[in-house]
Image 1: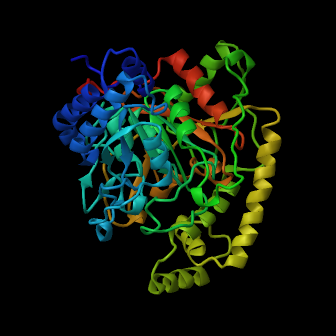
Image 2: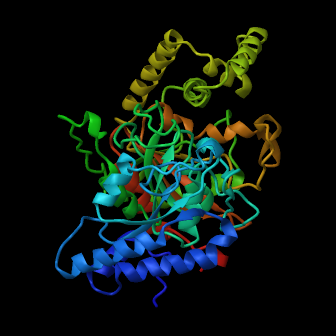
Image 3: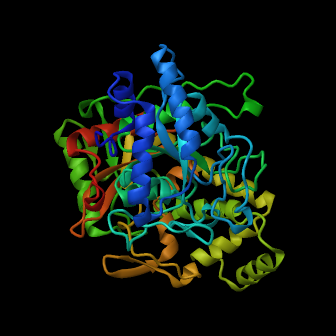
Length: 486
């Protein structure tokens, strides 16, 4: 059988349309990949190959009759375990949900099913999807295919690792603190954090199963093996929560540029607030210069009218107001004590978490207004630039560190220790302001670890950063296969 793994989803769909391979054959192929390769990395943690084989057979019968189920007709794929798939486990990394079997799909998953996909597995996440590593007490640890002693990122770490290892051709993840973008960067694949609100998040864990509201900041979006597939899956999943769909329409603008010669790029790399790994900075700079050589206008000095430090404070306060929801009163009392003893100028991660964790609604409105002021500055900036190239995280993937207290973990950047929660800093600008942001691989470090560039675009202009990811792919060559997973 042809080695179909590591082929983009769009390539597999075209091959099925041409009769070169069937959905049943692809499903069997990915089952074999799962059996032989998944034990090395533990990326896929639940499967339904019997159900997938039956649906794949139905897809092939429909195709033979000239019927089309949609743009994903017959495509085998996996889904991040934070999203509910009817009849399959939806654990979200939390032992209290280990027996949860939803009876209906998350809204975005239902759109994927309605588009014809064959879902055969769920991919691992950290506890409550709340870490930039991927491990939990239910399913264990997921490893990075480029070095199994290293993290794949999180919380969509299983998704990105499965893609890189050739276990799935397409994935659906979620992102509130880099949870799509960081795993894409660490594993050398493509990811896209959509504009907030354009993809329904109903059926995502957390909140608890059955939650109908959608939290601030968090989004659902695609991971893939090429930029084109990001757009393919985004077009499928973008749309309203059915409960609010009446009169709701979405028309995403075309990309601002379809070739580098029409592109205006700002590059934001050197910021004193969060130093970047030298090899990462070099590879991102080379990618920017490659766009310049291809005709793009590239500005390394341009910055919006705010600092990274300013927006990080706003972001982390609002982030922690979401992620600490439901914490016990005993912990909140501890936070109040910490705040009372801290200087007003203290903006450490611990104090920002405490302030966000006990934030009143009245105070939230004040921080939300600060966000609106930042958003207006972004809009002004994007009058002169189409995208911003920035780091995804301050460094490439790092060794597993499951020290219980995050404050005792260290993030080493250029041989200097930084606070572990600095992994959130470069994820923040796009999340805070609801902006779309894609990640595209730009090369490997001397140690053989992938580096991705984050491409931040204007509000609701998701197709622009995806298009730029495609330009970088065309110039630099795109996805590379990890040596042990060819």
